[in-house]
Image (tube, rainbow, N blue to C red):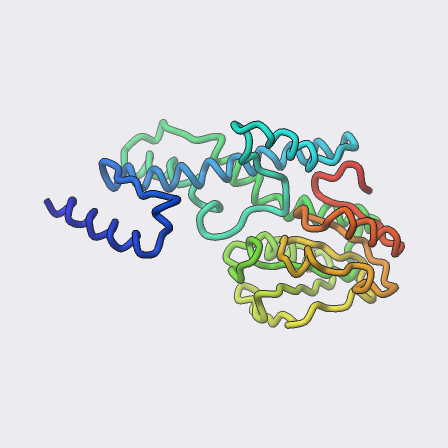
Length: 269
């Protein structure tokens, strides 16, 4: 009786804050089933993102731009939600939820024999992605970051939000600074980076004097950027870590004398 009343109250509340017309609520048999649904959904997404990271690196090695390939595959209704390689996974859910079933199996259900190797590997692959970007940038800058100046554009964990929890950007910045790089950053949704305890400039910084600019988050502010005007004679390495820039923007960067490269872009540098 109490469980039914609680479910009724939850449904009434959620119906006021969720678009239940397009995304109807489903009442499952127990709270355990409901929690399983949440963790399974997030784990599915995390595993599929990690899967595509592997294919992105493969495309880089064989000279293929993977993004038109992905769009071609998405034409099939069964594959319309195919993920894409990028800068990594952040936020509070996808970074931890794939690890929860193994912990729950061991600690809550007494089944330490139940393991989740795909989920575990996916979390590690996604954690490594910002370091993959950093290694690519390091190689393109001659193999040594000491004294190099990097500008990171986008520090939130996904586009059009100002949430930096477990952001891949934090991983990259800390690692780059440990290697002696001078890293500055910008995000149109943030003027303070809590995890690093430092301010972020409200205006887009100039690329003048930068050795590399990494586009990490697909904010509209970067997608709509007039790259030629912004560069204004500067010629840093332009590295697109998250399929942020359009073909026209990449062409503008090349026309300005910049070297251009990116995750999943084997057709570039």
